[in-house]
Length: 97
Image (cartoon, rainbow, N blue to C red; front, side, top):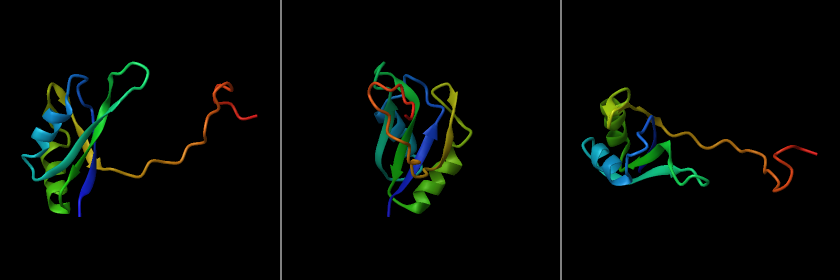
């Protein structure tokens, strides 16, 4: 069973390939995704890595949490489900009416 990890503190220059390569040192990586801002097209400085097993995920946390990668210190932990947020209308600026 694969395990999804949150990876924060990424350099804006980090690529999905370099992230996958780094985490593959801890074990088999199924995927690596960097979250991109829709407006600017630039990295938001965090992403997710899916490890092939719980053991590999724990090794990756131990190896990378608090460690330097591409000039930045990473935060690595088990990803939590995204909290449900209310939908924002197009013209209401996010305010409830």
